[in-house]
Image (cartoon, rainbow, N blue to C red; front, side, top):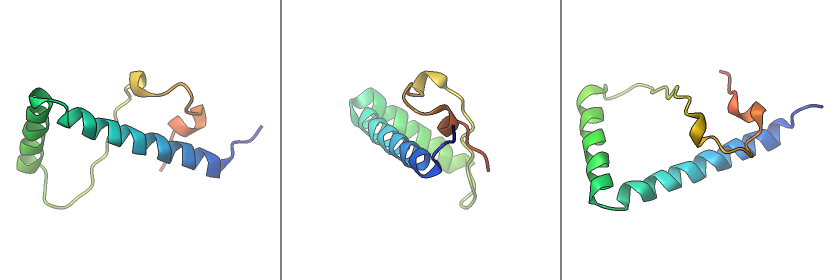
Length: 77
């Protein structure tokens, strides 16, 4: 039983796109979340270099949808 790489990529792409949309809506929802966004951006701009890469290596399984294939949740570089 092989994993269809193209299908897996599409599922992962769709999940991250939807997650990003949800996060933008959440951050604009009310003044509390807007302050969260402003504060986060302040510290990112203050402490991160102007150029570079960011690795988001979090593993919050609570946010991983159950319909996302297991193969898609393990990404290797």
